[in-house]
Image (cartoon, rainbow, N blue to C red; front, top):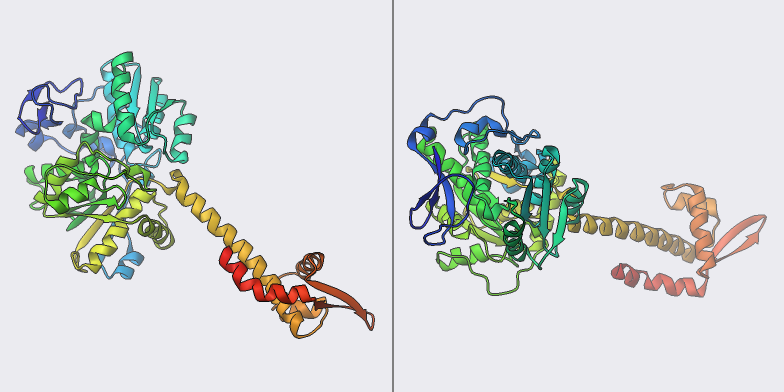
Length: 467
């Protein structure tokens, strides 16, 4: 039997409808169940999210799009690069809408239908909105999504195509949560926000169940942290497995935040119970841009009880980690997810994690949803193309500054790396700009560098610096 329990004062409440705060003391509520349910509930069926239905709050109308059962990828190349023997990525990009939030959407929308709701409201910085919009579309109910000003366009595109009603409110998701709370009261909708619905924790604890079935218990489990709910949920899943007698240890939990928004890391470093952030939060990893994490206290509890740690990484480290994961393991992770690998590299350098440890990193969502990385890569490609064009023209000018020659000879001197037509195209463009000129000798057209061309040759290195 499931019920809602206050983490602070121990008060108990009916399981449904889901509530996020205690009526007595205002603290966070979470789902609990009696020992019989915990110890006798079995994993049943195929390797999917619903395999763990017996250890989830009761569901009558199951809404599913094939979520869960995501692969645990052994990262052999990155393990070698970092000196680890065993490195794994739990790849949640394989879910239906390409993120871990599909687990939450499956359970939340199922519960909303069980309770007779025709609409779901949620505040989100991206992934949850995309997931709920899709699952609501499948179920024929309305999805109202409140997003902050800064949200990844790829995630917003998903919400739009799934026909969600979208409202922008506030700078960050903390502001959007206030509006979502108001809207549910105004319209009588179902509250689907992950921070305001404890079913999200129950949904995400299944990640721990799956990892246990796939590899046993890792020594370290590294999780990107925004509200703190995901880290706490994974820890809770392993704790339940321990209480069931299936495991005799739990992984050391690592919470990772961006340097520009790290209230949980600061609280961990200062050894205080509640997250703290005095500055304006700022990071390109929008999925973890949360100033006041609602599950921050519980996340800190999980970190400390597991003898884990909390660490922040720079946006530059995140960006580089994102590229490494893609280049070496073929997984395109969103920035928040890549932060786990960036943190791992730092923890290895600091000798917190050694090569004998088995490490699992959670990849929460796809990089295709995050616009910053795509824009950066596009810029990089454009820069490379421009740089190549300038480099080719510079080579032509340099060759001609040493000796007048004709097109065919230039083509050979350039290593025949392009067509002869392309060489003449470059020569025509250089001629139009007054950098080279041509003349006829013995029936052949020869090219030479002008004074302006020679000045341009000296300036090429400066031009390259400006690209």
